[in-house]
Image (cartoon, rainbow, N blue to C red):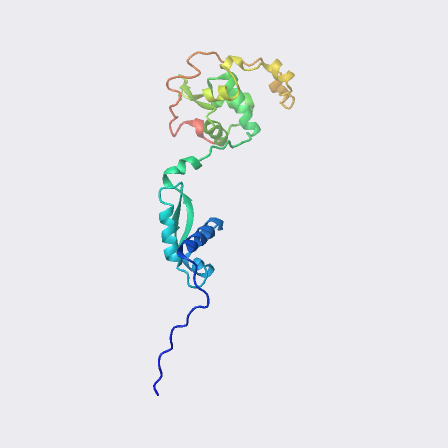
Length: 229
């Protein structure tokens, strides 16, 4: 008597229809926070299912739709259609708190523009770090003005249109004076020598504010960018 090969064991449960398997794959991909691998689909679908074919049908069903079944590495996930990615972009306002040094520097530029770094330091009584100036330039609240026709031709700083827009000013002439600042309580923490100084000169609306050469960056060896101890 010869041994006959064992007949393949028949599953006790029939696999669901392929359309139902497609729905199951869709549900798994939708509910998962991470892309789902083929092995995970095989483990989750009922015995005898064909997750690869179900996934193929699902991908065809979502072709041309707002979301698509995309391959991510060796796994699969729902992703926004590539041509609609721009709809997902959202502008956010980043709140940034200025340091006291930045606030003082900005105020000096606004009231005394066009003003050089040396003049800012003379008014403040302390050095101005490169980081402080860079931060204000990055915010687009100050920019480079004309170079002074003095030895070394130091660059000056002026406020920008963005600065005026941010504070609701039509021009630098609309900046409040010392009296208004004191009444608003904005000078209470200022050193006495700065409070009791002469009334700041408001900048006029001449070309000195927004000169044609205002965006010209200083040369690399310009002392304006040397950090002070």
